[in-house]
Length: 93
Image 1 (cartoon, rainbow, N blue to C red):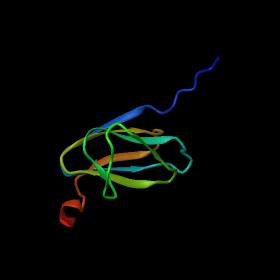
Image 2: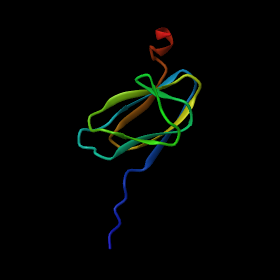
Image 3: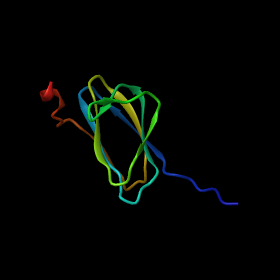
């Protein structure tokens, strides 16, 4: 019997007014993003706490937090994921 293990979860702690950017590979069909604490939004829509959002293949997006957040990304290691401070969100307000 063989047990197939999926991608390892990666956790990201974001300080206030930071953005978590991610790029899902085109061949990835099982990536998810979960907000595990704090608050964050994607394209202006607030993420629900502890809900795994399915990420479609080839998605390039960002989650922004005003107050701080912890996010968990489950995706293959080749998925690009990083936190950034050079976000335009504060200027939009």
